[in-house]
Image (tube, rainbow, N blue to C red; front, side, top):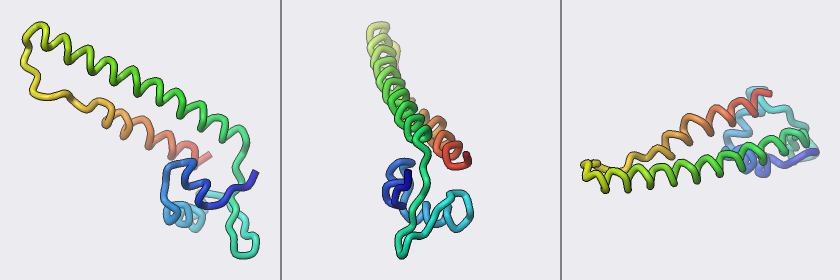
Length: 106
């Protein structure tokens, strides 16, 4: 299945410019149909991306719930917590970016 550069960029959460650079660097295989650039995407890849995104959404909810529980417990025990640590932001940096890099390299 072929997709446009914009569609592919949306799939992997990158900008159009990044995709064009990846094509130029040979990281993404593409074909040119007139003026349009088309990128070949495997059906299995789309399925894996969707499945992984769903798992990440579930994990994100679990982390938010755990953060709330920790905060409530700290209030009950009157432990001073300076602020809620943004675990979710650090998770996105650690988990999501390497996932995208692996998808592109395959």
